[in-house]
Length: 320
Image (cartoon, rainbow, N blue to C red; front, side):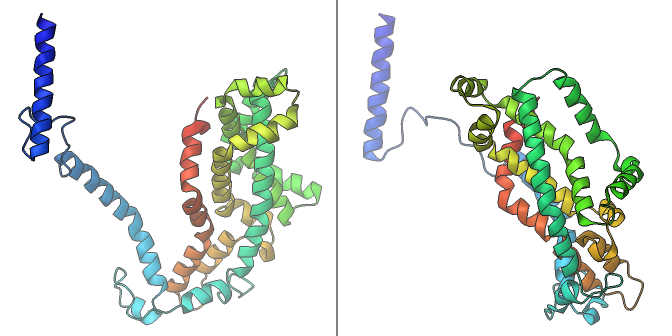
């Protein structure tokens, strides 16, 4: 009897709500659904205000670099570093790219840019190719001593670079690669392998094991499963690896200055030579333009593949 009365009341309230909506009148039973959240609550104001302040703090140096790079030296000497340029000039960018002295040569960063490209492309391709196969084997093709091998490999990721500088000099000298770009490619490939192997191994472990077993049942072998199943499903982690390697190799200074000759210095070493030059007038606009040119490649990679980078991290890059 009580259930019948409750059902009748519910039907009556629903009917009243529908009649009021049809007549454009407010619902007598009150608003329904979740309570709307206030857009300008104290919590939102504090949260977004803090984020804006942090963003402005980190973007302010970039703003100063950009506006300074478009100013002439007479305007820079006025000391108003935050003011936009009164008269925009592109001469600092031209000098930074093609005319600034980077030591014995005065052809700007152009030479260093192509040296960095010749170092970057083979280093990224080789390190990711080898590390992805290592991670795939360690995740799906267990062999005797695989865990010990993985532990030793990961231990290499935590050895300071400075400890290995002199031994690598001797090794490259014995191989006939010291002072050559191919020797630097080999160094970046080896030092990038431990952390990339960890990333790929954890990502492949997070993939459904049933796919691997089904492929084995269908007769697929080591390379068939790798190229037909693992690689197509692992685009996000490959993007993570590319971003990490491009950033690390392009921004490297220590290996570049030690293992190459002056005519084969990468872009970062030539930037250091421009900024720390003791000859002539200190051209801050050229220094700022040269710094922006040097950082353009990793910034572009981040902007293009930022979403895939987040997906790769969230999908297993830090699991395991």
